[in-house]
Length: 330
Image 1 (cartoon, rainbow, N blue to C red):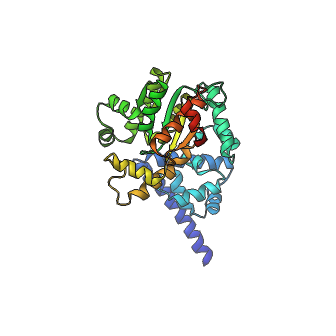
Image 2 (image 1 turned 90 degrees about the horizontal axis):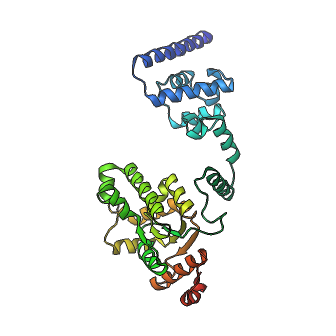
């Protein structure tokens, strides 16, 4: 009796899978789900596993797996994780991440997996130099770029300190946000509202590329979110001497309020928590800068002198008498 029920259930599952395939062919399938299903089948074939074996290993029904392979099932994240584990591959490979698209990519991923951050940084520098896109500025060169880029969250002091630094060095001062607005013909807020974040990032990249092309020497105040786009941030690290201006969250908030603008936190009732979350999310990227300075540690005038001394030393420029007096702050 039980064997009959099991056999009937198995036939029903197979029939359902066939029906699912037919139904899927009759309807317009989602391209992502179709591609996902093709990758599951390809990975299963590569591993030499039957659908039943994968279903058992992933702890999902064979019918569910069949739907996934035919591109007609909207699989949950947990199911995808289980299927990836059963196929002994990463979730990225299952989803079609570019770094899993060819054998060479996969081999490179394997070499880099579980490496510490310092090792990955050295690899990034070497790759950048090999491809001609630049590595970490100054790390493997005789001198750093005299193009200074200030990075950090809004309210860190990039505009105020940047203008002072540019005046001291005799360099042009470039406020990248203003250059973005020139490209777009409208304000940053309008770009975001009318065209969205992706368009803003494109304008940001163009503005940075033009600034690098025009100014061999400059002090550039960058938008706080420039780290959001890896390609743009890579360009910044490669072509500029970067300085992370750090500050306590309370100082960030106080300075932004003093500017009369709470963007991008204006609509939040938990503005301070939002600010702390943004800072925590970006700190790992800001920390890739060549230099860093705490702008909460001292008054404006003292901090300005400390930044000037820090940059002059990094560029091997002669220090002034006042720089010598402030060297203890560094």
